[in-house]
Length: 220
Image 1 (cartoon, rainbow, N blue to C red):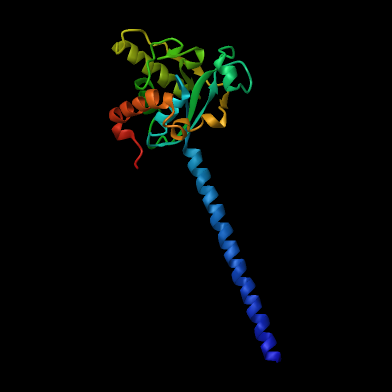
Image 2: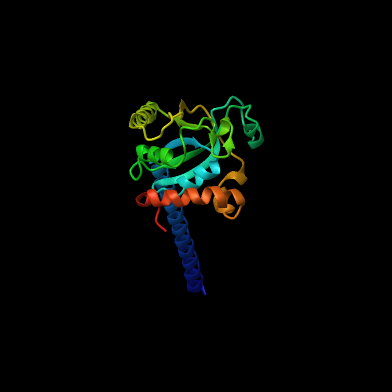
């Protein structure tokens, strides 16, 4: 009986040891994954663009290889925490924008600027198509001097090239504050592909974009 008790206690102790090892291994793996994610996030950069309705702009940039996230929101105004209704009133000074997180080792800021300028009309002041108002202005909000110089240089080169018959009116300003838009605006095209505006405005834009920038698209 004594030997059986010793064996039982030994077996129980071994179970706890194995269990403890599994829990420790699981925690180690979790910590390692979090550190790897942190390293990856530290490699990412941010770009903020406005080129009309953010539903359109978001749908385009979400398809770009190297872009890890796109958030629709508001920037460039004087009101804190504006709502969609506030921005649409034209009184807050905000523009509808998207904020992009991207991996510069896959897609450069210059390449994002190329997509930005080729997927909207930068010569129409405070409007894109039927969308009219200061909230629909063409704008680049830069995060640092390097982005500022790159955007201004690119704009100057485009102006000299005379690609458009009218002058480029794209605003280039420092990003002071970005406010994410309401939840129902996020992934709007993906969630509402058959909605009228999506079908008649966004879908043709995406089809044109995918033909021009085929080599920059994310894989299936």
